[in-house]
Length: 406
Image (spheres, helix red, strand yellow):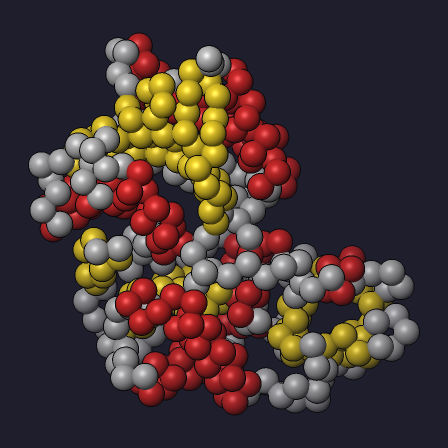
C-alpha cells in the first residue's frame, strides 16, 4: 500500500470550488504550492489556502484532473481495510435498491459515485470486468478486485474470472497505456446473462465498453408494456437489447438497425436464444441514411426507439452534438404514427437534461409533431448519480406519446 509520508498540496485562494460543492476533482490550475515531495500516483493531503484540511487523494502531473479525492478526511489510511469498507457499502447499496434478482449482472463500482474515483467494475453473473482510467487507482486495482471477491464470496457468490477492459482513450490523458487482458487465470470470456427475463451472450473481452450497457436495464423494461401489439423500430440496436425487450413484451413486429455487422450478428443470435427470431428481425444499416429512405417509402411505426451513441464526449463539441440529436429526433419522429410513441435518449453528460429537452422540442416543432410526455428516466440505480459530480449524471431517457398537429 502507498502510505509513505505524504506531501501536502495547498490550493489557491478562491479555488477548489468543484471539490467544495461535493465533487472529487482538483484541477491543475487550482494548485498553489506543494509541501514535501511525491511521485505521480501517490496519495497526497490537500489543504485550502488558509490551511483548512480538504481531504486526501492521488495526484498525477500528467492529468488536467491533478488530484482525485479518495477521502474528505486527510489522514485516512488507504489500505485493504479502506477499500473493503468502500466496496461493502457499494455492494450493500446495490442489494438494497435493486434486489437479489437484478444484481446478478450489475455495475458494482461506479467511480466517483461510490467514492472510488477512476475505476468501474461490472459484474456479469460470476465474472468481473474492470476498467481503470487513472494512474492512482491503477496501482490499487488488484487489491480492489481481491477485496471485492471476498465480499461477494461472503454472499455465496464465487467469481470464476476477472477481465480488465482499460482500453479507453482517457487513459492516455493520465500517461497510461491502453490495456486489456485477464487479471488472474484465463477463462471463457463469453458469459450468458439474464436481464428483464431476456438472455444475452456477453463477450466481455470484445464487446462495447465492458461488454454490455447495463445502465439502460429499467428503461428497456419500461418499453415492454409500451410495445405490446405494436410495430416497433429500434435504431442503434447494438446487441438488440431494446428490440428484444419489445419482442418479449409481445410486440407484433420489431426491426432493429445498426451500422455494425458484428453487433447485428450478436443481436440475431440473441433473438434465436430467446425464441424471438420470428418477431424480431435485424438489418445492418446506417441509421442516418436508412430513416430518410423509410420516410420516402412511407413506412410508419407505432413505436420508434432512438438509442444513439454519445454525439459528444467533450464540452467543445456540444454545439455539433445538438445538431446531431436534433437531426436524429426529427428523422425518428417522421416515422411515428399519429398517436404512437417515441423513446429517445442521450448518454453524454455534456448534453444536460435541459439542453436535451430543448433539442427534442425543437425537433418536434420542425416536423410539426406534438409531444405528450409519458415519463422521464435516467440510468439504473447501480449507476448512481452523485450530486455535484456532474460526470456521474449522463443518461437521459424520454418516452413520448406523439401526435400530428391538431
